[in-house]
Amino acid sequence: MRASAPGSIPPPKSGVAETLERKVSSTSSWATGGVRPARGGRAAAAVLAAGLVAALVGALTGCATTTYKPFETRGDAIFDGKGGTRSVEDGMDIWEWGDPPRRYRVLGLIDDERPGGAVQMARLRSDMVKKAREVGGQALIQVRNQSRVVGSQTTGNTSAAAYAGPATAMGATTTKPLRENSAQFIVIRYLD
Image 1 (cartoon, rainbow, N blue to C red):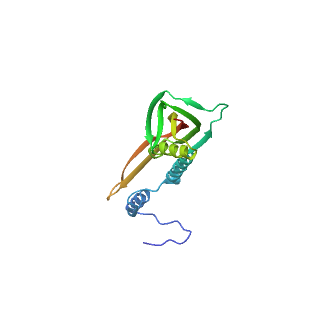
Image 2 (cartoon, helix red, strand yellow):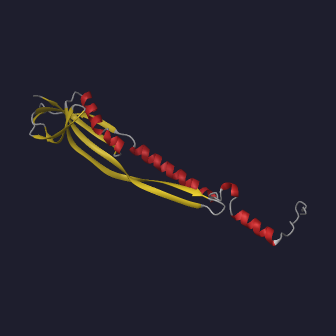
Image 3 (tube, rainbow, N blue to C red):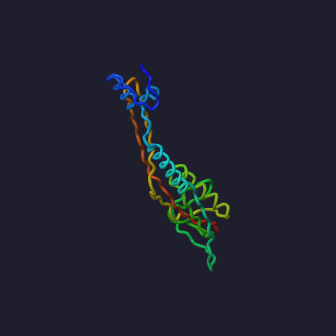
């Protein structure tokens, strides 16, 4: 093979050499498993954008806020309950429908906003009981507990394999709703 001088036009190639060079340059090398790199970085930019969106959604919906507001009245805030259904959480009555069939005083109201995921919702009642105990409550009356869809999250994976030929790729995605839960409880103290 003859060498060309710098700046000169390279010698013509044979048909076989030209075909091989075209084939090698149009596919990636055997060392990369036949997988071509992304052109223009579009795939990397898409992954980065998806990650930023997921982080933003997580930041906006990832925290629970629980606030207590004392009940203020001119009177004594004593009520005669008529009855209802209840459950017990950590030794405290939670009246889910109706109110206790006895006299009670209203101390205040707990508002709670949190993501509607299984882990966060599993802690809802114990968090409410803890807050009620902090302010001297003996029981809770559930006013509302509702969930709403605020978006969705899509995750996916892919895998590729190549053995002495073109690469084969497979993938799957899963989409799940992102929920936000809003709940309100009245904190009470039994009088009899």
